[in-house]
Image 1 (cartoon, rainbow, N blue to C red):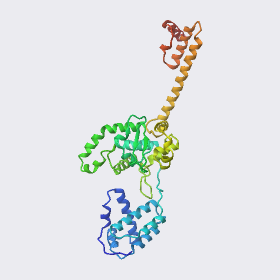
Image 2 (image 1 turned 60 degrees about the horizontal axis):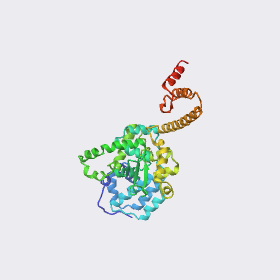
Image 3 (image 1 turned 135 degrees about the horizontal axis):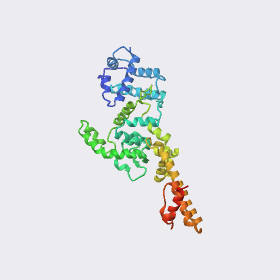
Image 4 (image 1 turned 30 degrees about the horizontal axis):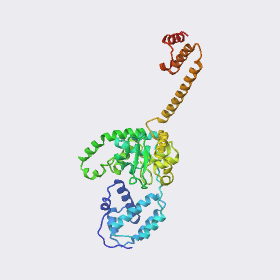
Length: 392
């Protein structure tokens, strides 16, 4: 396909049609690379764009040559972005290549994600959360402890939260989720605490925003627990990364390594439940369709609660739970021991004195008395044994 006189739409004018700063930056760099490939890099690129659009070049051949040349030089994901930017730019200026050409280019440059990323460590999370505002803490603690996606989290409405559930349960409707399957998720105690605080101040946040110049455009979010656009949440996260000194970027794409999506990876790696339960809670297709029906809500709640210690970054809940279990075991042993001692002393003529000795020992070991269990032991008898112990 060759050029023709068209109504020029310079690349700067084209880029202004995108509100997202990251999208503008990616598309601008993509167009730069395309024009630099076909022209001297020292030429003014805006001028070259207008010149190119009004030329008699074979645009289809130019596009094919460009992508053949860069294949393998950049990540497939970034090549897909460049392909999209160039195609939209040309079509906005009434230059349409055959669809089969774009299909062949996509096939020869398959898209698969090789961006560098990793789940954050617990210490890194503590640093990041120090710099998040209250609503930011709420959003990302739900993602971290519930395994939710950012889009799902931002669509949650107050009526979706079951405040009577322990741990807190959130119903994700089908229209919220990526695969359109509804599901229940649970969140940690620290997420619940932050969410309770946020709900107390949420109305004030909305009223304050109503006074801003962008209030009308943002009102569509007011029914959400977190009344904001996805891009706003991403800015909140990136600002916290930067302040925490953790905003390292992928060399190929320039995207942060610790993106919000890595919180789901943290959930999958650190939550203590079985893999199948975690996959269900995260909403992965195969597990939702095959396994979800095998678990009741109570079974999922119980499994989540047992493994919740792994996704609580400010509580040492695993140690607390272990200690509680140990205390429970000791209390059971104490009850059995009390019953046994009573049986042994039942027919003993000196039962009262021996029981008194036992309770003194019990008091020394466990640092508490059980007066209801003394069964007829007089205060004088008990005091006499205490005096005996003190004089040893």
